[in-house]
Length: 147
Picture 1 (cartoon, helix red, strand yellow):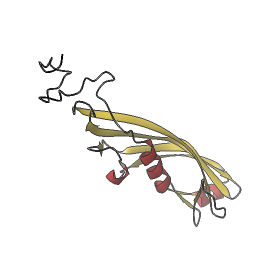
Picture 2 (cartoon, rainbow, N blue to C red; picture 1 turned 60 degrees about the vertical axis):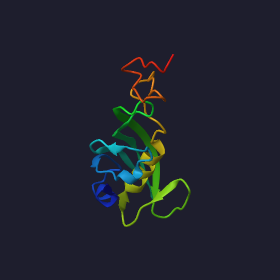
Picture 3 (spheres, rainbow, N blue to C red; picture 1 turned 120 degrees about the horizontal axis):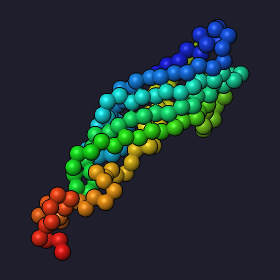
Picture 4 (cartoon, rainbow, N blue to C red; picture 1 turned 90 degrees about the horizontal axis):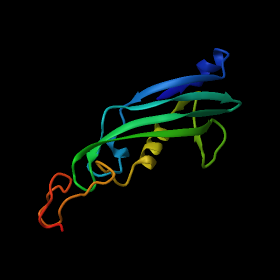
């Protein structure tokens, strides 16, 4: 996910849009028993401003995982917005670096993915979970152990 800002400068423009389909590494997933369902979609706008480059947009992804309560398979979908600054010269906690006119979005996207991961996912808001005695899915049956 690299954008060559030199080409943008040479074209006389100071803004462009981008769209990347990204094969994210499962190491960015913090939720147990989850895998990416398809590609991560990153789209947005890049703006030149002096020696800084600003990017804003959104990251869309889906996870194939298990409901935290009943262990039923579920697809979790998320959209994460971003608005970040890149600089060749400035250092800072909130500034990403770029070199030789190339802005690589990979590090930022991976950070946003990890920070956006849920702690738990449910098949439905009122999931009843599993019977602690026999393990029956309480969404599908009325277990004799639960009164």
